[in-house]
Image 1 (cartoon, rainbow over the protein chains, first blue to last red):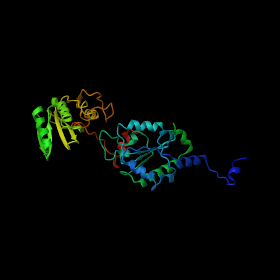
Image 2: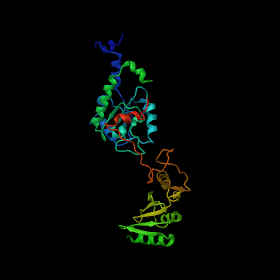
Image 3: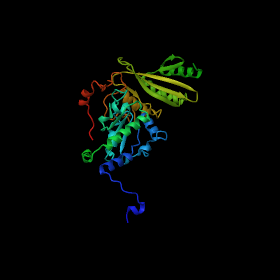
Image 4: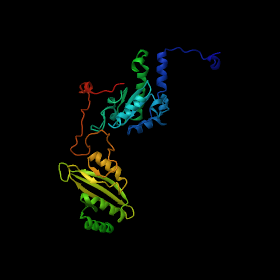
Length: 164
Length: 170
């Protein structure tokens, strides 16, 4: 009585816990469904049939921060929006990652004035910056693959450290 | 100019001592602050200007008196007419009487007027900021408001700015 009776003789795969966990984290990394400006249009097309982010285990954009692992900051962040963005980030469960998509989110972009935060890294800690104004869907997907590489390289001893 | 509009302008000139300018066939009516509420009421009730398209202002800084022109753009769908009213306001404690009793959408427009230009709408039921955060200081669309500037981070000054940049914590 065990799993092999139900599945048949599939053999055994051995791996490390670290690799198994990192694999599962990257292969079902659900981004949060929210966009702040024009970059969101590119994010949507990256999600849609032509570029199809579900190839990377992202078939679902979660409209709730409680269910999402990845925050894609798609667009410029105004000073009024910044506390809201931070609150959404705080509501996401650990482990969580942030991609700063586009020039505006990364460094303020063409906006250098009183109303726009010059880089979302002043509000939330950013893992990957994607350049472009706006980045094409390939650019965003490249950023996501880069993030996957980063997650795959995470060590077990750092997990507790990251979660504070 | 449209004949219907001509007669409306003449009645405004007679009743509210308004001055009319024309630019490329579009008339602009300049009114005194005290006249704007009766003028708007009359335009709505008598001349069928059903809609206030926009309510905004222009800052003529460093001129002080009048510093602002408050603009009311009206539309009459019944007669197919558009009319622009201008109200000059002084730079010291600028105030206009509220138009929210006449056109309901003036409520939010006047909140924006207060938020962006610091022009108070007297008698407004709920004069709060509408675009900027509630604790914001100053009125950003005034010409003397500092634009705000942060030094952009390039390769040559990356580290210098990196040191003083307030990065977010986890």
